[in-house]
Length: 76
Image (tube, rainbow, N blue to C red; front, side, top):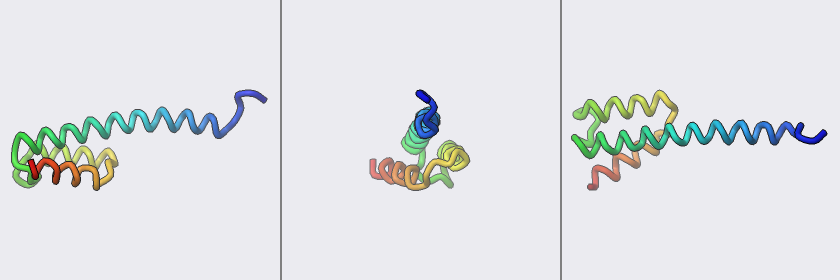
């Protein structure tokens, strides 16, 4: 039966989900970068950065991404 491959259906659905998730991760990473550049790169002293990191964690952004972003910004 043409068009009834379960793997193809999973692949297309996963592609859509990954695209949306990637867009969200990029948006949150950009917000973390902007918040760190505008103020102190320490989340304890920067409320905007603290909120951005909290939102990223609640959206299941991998922890390594925001930590790497903070280190890049701290190096300025």
